[in-house]
Amino acid sequence: AAWLEAATQIPGVRLTGLPRDSDRVVVVNQDQGDAVPTSGAAPVSLADEAPFLLTSVESLADLNARLKARGKAAVDMQRFRPNIVVGGLLPWEEDTIKRLAIDGVEFHAWQRCGRCKMTTIDRQTLKHGPEPLATLSTFRERDHGQRNFGMHLVPAEGWAGAGRVSVGGRLEVLEYHEERRAEWLRLFRGQ
Image 1: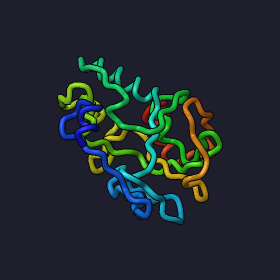
Image 2 (image 1 turned 135 degrees about the vertical axis):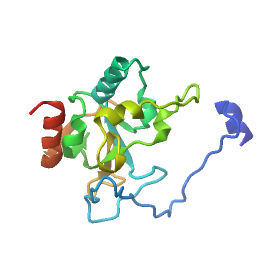
Image 3 (image 1 turned 30 degrees about the vertical axis):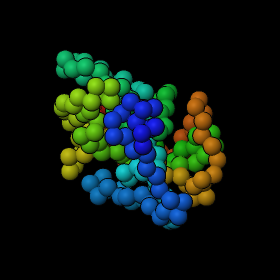
Image 4 (image 1 turned 90 degrees about the horizontal axis):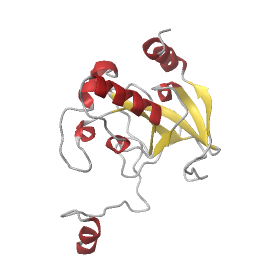
């Protein structure tokens, strides 16, 4: 513990993990209303709800433009703690994806990620305030108070622990979620 504290310069920091035989699986957020899209149990390690969180640089840019318009400071992607960040989409278009492949590894885009107060903490200063949740509430709030940023992904059946996704990998949308796509078109494309 002393070595880790010295190396990270974070007082009291601790390293934790799960044993190999851990049987944690994804957790359905009842407020989102989306069932897990696989018949098998989708494993998860230390994340809250799902093993992967996909966000897009375009959605962050749109959020930051809205923050600026409200006289607020921009936030960085670290606030949302994703493990997959993509580019080349339109803002919030990640909501519309049902199935995708990254470097040939298939995933189900399962449920939107309802954001918590952790996003209000600046990782550099550890100060917190109302943003970005206050601004997300103006245009991304759904039923039950869920303010969404990003999509939870679970590996498609047969892909858990198989394949490799790498920085700069190729994203291919295999299928769109028609209901979410219609909502996105209505809210963000004026259709």
